[in-house]
Length: 126
Image (cartoon, rainbow, N blue to C red; front, side):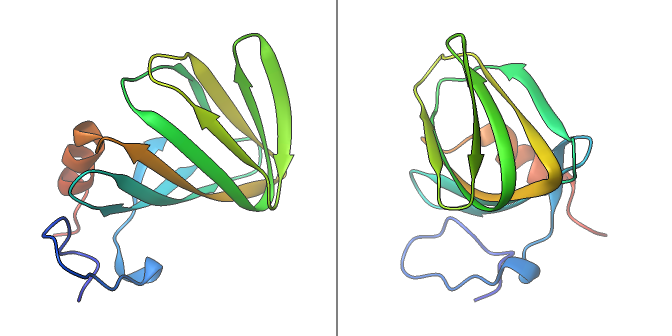
C-alpha cells in the first residue's frame, strides 16, 4: 500500500521514501504515518535546526535513531543520541534542537495530531 493512503485501518505497509514530507519548522522534515488513534513520524533535522517551545494535548515519544538532539522540558535540558528516547506528557512545554551533525528520530503522538494531518494534506505535491 502506498504511503499516501493512510489511517484506513487494517494493515498498511509504508516505505519512508514513499511518504511525501512536510515541514513544521525551518530545517525540520517529517514523514507521517497516520493510524486511527496515533501518529508516528520519521523526522529529520538539519544541524542546529530546532522546534521552538510549544505544548499540545498529545502524549509524545521520540526515539533518536541518528545524530543528537537536545530536548528541554520542565527546566531540564538533555542531549540525546542514537538509542535514547524522551516522553513528553500532555500540555508540557518543550523544545528541541539538533546537534552539529543533525538528528534523525521517530516520534509518536497519541491521539493523532489533526493539525499535522492538515499540514501534510496541504503539503501534498501537485
